[in-house]
Image (cartoon, rainbow, N blue to C red; front, side):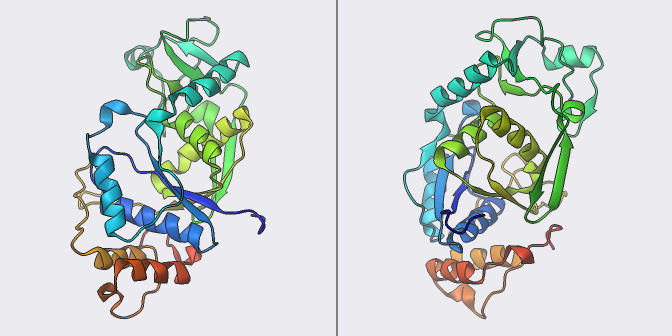
Amino acid sequence: MNKDVTIVGRFAPTPSGPLHFGSLVAALASYCQSKSQQGQWLLRIEDVDTPRVVEGSDRQILQDLETFGFEWDGEILYQSEQFEYYQDSLSALIERGHSYACECSRRTLRNIGAKTGPMGQIYPGICRHKNLDPTIHSVRVNTDAITASAFIDQVFGPIELNIRDQVGDFVLRRADGIYAYHLAVVVDDAQQGINQIVRGADLLQSTCLHIFLQTLLGLPEPEYLHLPLIKNMRGEKLSKQAGATAVDTTQPSKLLVSAMHFLGQSTEPDMDQASPEEVIRQAVKVWNPASIDPAGK
């Protein structure tokens, strides 16, 4: 990236439960990636899927971040306050012929024997030419003209996905009016001027969808750095859905040091005895993304 361009990164937790260790690792990595380049670190609450939101969890996440010594730049953006911008982008895609209304349910696709790809059911474009009302149906993006979408990740290297054949026309707004994460995150990143994105490797393939949408909407493409996933004893990604427990805020420095070790970063002896603010300052000084092991070892 041009050295004259201010780096703008972000941390974007979902308020569906408390901050867990995987979230802490993502927060620390995104913070270090931005601040090691004298950039900004923004905070976004990704509450676009309103039925999943747990009341009060956003406040708890903010409080936990402060306990761990993080300081963010600017105002906090809530996706639930962005719906008009998502609709504007969706309407633009519909007007340009890139998106269309769809009446198909998951059951419909199962009944017709739709194939399954790496991201679920592959939608074969059944409703592309039905001219249905987008105000009462889900809205999908037309992927017929796109095959490969690719990018080079700073940890995992070249990533490529054949969107048309492996994903199909994916949903941008559900029939119940909930905007899809894929649309929301692309609109938000552009609006906030995010040019470096650090997040978990579970979104590696989704990034190909995001780059496709950025192209359709004429939005800039950020640089991407995906982090290896932390897994529980069952081999599942550490997440709220998988029952991840909240971080222990009584030992912030110890957990920050553990996060640094997971990310392959060097630490000084007894750093876990320092204040969390000092641990984070040291983490920024030694930050080297080349030390991150894609396997998370």
